[in-house]
Length: 606
Image (cartoon, rainbow, N blue to C red; front, side, top):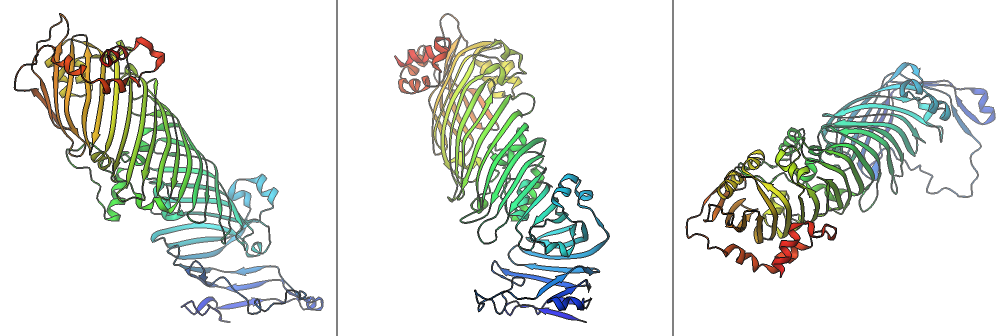
């Protein structure tokens, strides 16, 4: 009656286990063979309290009194112990774990009758092969884990199944923390030593980022998700454990995901490795990864920011994304993950395909090397480097766009289906800050763009929603549809302000030169557009135009001052030999003279 097992001296609470009543039967004849045999033992309402104060200080790891003085050459005892069955009514396990911030109560009840492993998991062949025991007890848990509310239910095998070394021990659980759900069924191998697990494991919730609180695995914020796969783990509490989430399938937002990931614990940081693929990827579901709103994840992000006391609100009148990169967690884990997206969806008009990237995270230093995808019949290739260990974050992007087809960039615009033109470009940008807006706001670098054989009209500007473009095209060309032989831009960016070395349009009617500045920091425009007639085709406008205002609300008009002198625009562009020569590198040799930009830039170079 009333048996108490006490805690070690350095554990503040007195009681580890309380047994109000214990009954047992002893087989006396077995004593003659030096065997203590208990056919059964019955525990009435057992109550256990598991406490962990630090990684190496808990109340369930014992050093027996004679272990240190044990003679290595001593013969083993001639006596043995045998226990055939453990019975008990409702039991309780209280967990107070300072390491995982867990404060839980787990209630254990007999199931009434054992449930076969195959009946719970639906895996008959596996159960027969491994001879997994039945589920005997039901579990109910409530409390907090890592400071978050947690509730759940489950089933486990009988107590005697724990003693069999190498015998799989059946487990099943389904629990929730907030809107995050984790469910699994399978076996624990060598349960007394916690040698490993083999489970069917399902996750679901509002965001993959929420799993960090439950698992310690750092994943990006995403729209709602669910996954279903097999977890095979080898656990070594002294060195490192390996968790292999194999062949999982699921979704993030409206995108499917498939793959395998391996999470390895250890020093200096745990590491996540593997391959993930999406056969149909919705681009908006990647929004939180690149610092822009994904739509479905907006409310979740708002709750997260409110919880942390942070504000990342998009300012009124601003276009560049202000969503913050959460670099404070980047140093908790390293990663080496390859991702592929076969088919990409972005509304109905942006044709993107075959996205692939290699994500490398090491000591808060994040690289996407490379990031590639097909777009509009051409390709985009980039190397992205974000140094999250720097305050503020340092960023660098090197991007190359090649042979993007104009008619495929705007497949819904009938006018653009008449052109065979293409677009090429290079960008090299460096900046600092914890959002896209901040990075661009103080960025330095260069941007080059070339477009050949395009078309432009007021109607096109109206279709794509560029009211300022509508005004400018109308002011220069009227209502005519105009062919653009070549559009060329070579912009230097210093401290977030872009200044054209060359920014010109060669059309069938006019030569147009653009000068001025565009500030990414203030999102202010201050541009001057100088048009000049070509040959016998006369345009009516001989005054320069201006574009001022903000990126979101630009304003255009006729600039006061003298008229443009005939030949002045061509003369000005003729002086820009070096910027023009740099743009020639964007044109593939295979295009030859078919690309009108090659001819025009070569003439400028001369």
